[in-house]
Length: 69
Ligand SMILES: [Zn+2]
Figure 1 (cartoon, rainbow, N blue to C red):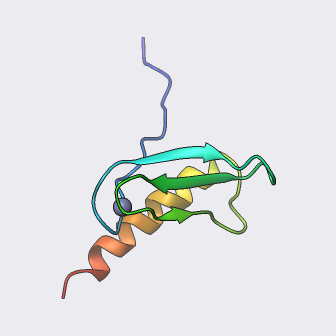
Figure 2: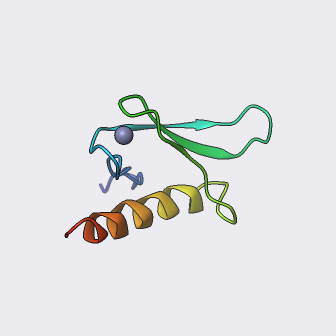
């Protein structure tokens, strides 16, 4: 049997550490927070799952290639 696919979060694009996902108590939107460097990110237009995690992973990936200089 195949396990339910859970989107795995990419690591922080700024410092490479793991990020935490949490729901903002005020707006009920999904945010991502890095305990290591203090980055906190949310995505306009993708504030809810599953789009929030997808947006995060896209951003983490594209930032990775941007850093190549
Ligand atoms: Zn970080």
